[in-house]
Image (cartoon, rainbow, N blue to C red; front, side, top):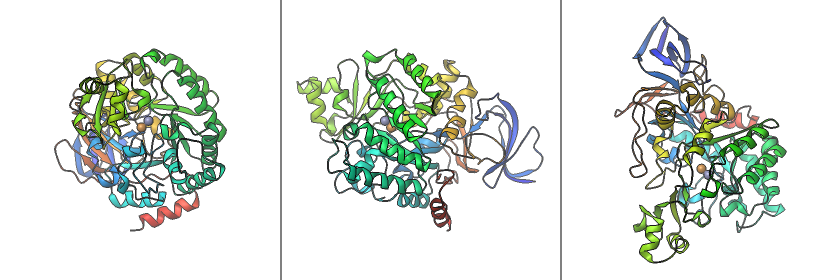
Length: 493
Ligand code: ZN
Ligand code: CU
């Protein structure tokens, strides 16, 4: 037997949540060809992995990398963390299907500028990703807000029947072309006025196509239980699996309610398929939202179009400097980005530990001073929350970043170290794995990630160039014939 690569003597964490074992793993033609104690055969490349841990490549289920996987396709932010697959299109915003006639509305502006949105059809986006050859695999959701903006003259209301029909047609086309599902961002002003009925019509369309629904809830503050109920109902009626995005207890008045939220989620799980994702930090980040401006906790301004010089300062400092109140200062900064220190550590820990929670970074790759989750999320879960604080046993921590995520998003052939699966793998040093990105110094590569393979191709070594760029576009499983045809056409050459 001649393998492309054999990884010898690794401590294998297979992603299923099961116990760690020692084995050799042989890679051939992009896949895991064999796993054995003393693997026979030769290989073009042999990696001595004694003392290192081998896990399935991490799946970042919550990203805003839509445009970056095309325009910055080497994706150092993710590949350096051991991430081999990103799910784009979360929080109601996606790069496609989008046609813009002016600047992108908030929070679509998190993804890029008007000229970056050049994918009116989902299939245009798929083709561009494949052409760009990103270093990670890409699965894509389409955003409710993005689609609303295609058909509605103003967004601060519900869609009319006619607009809704056009929105559903956009969704149907994207699903036919291989999208994984639909996301919503109902907390944002540009989707907040959409009625539950509007969202239900979309999830019903989604259900017919067999997609998944992810939602940034209508509120993450005091009314969160009601917002969760709405999500349970809309997904149940559409007969779609639900993922609640970046589940959190936001706002001081809402702290210590994580058990309540998790109980509600567990109760719903008895009747329907539900899950959630979260990032391992007690601060959130997004565009600067006037509804989230508060005196209770700090708000850090990461960028401002109107007042670029104020980026990198706290909102209360800016307000003091301008001698106005916080809201007035926030208005003057718009459009802007912010980090909100809005959570309690105990709630973050409870949610992370909950068995249905997957890890998603929610990293904002275009932010000039990004929240550290962009560069640190996955090493932090292992280094900080598994090794240092003991919150999560290592196999469970890895499961939340691989096997569980692949199962929820139906990424067949990924997420576990198993014969026949794609060779998406990360080899790391458990004693040294550590997120180095901080709130003050956020653009830092984590330590302890030693080797990353994507579809069998070596794609990351610290400080070294690698062949890489072997990511694939992940079409929704059990696709319609349309998707199969499209896939064939796009991969022909
Ligand atoms: Zn969100
Ligand atoms: Cu997000």
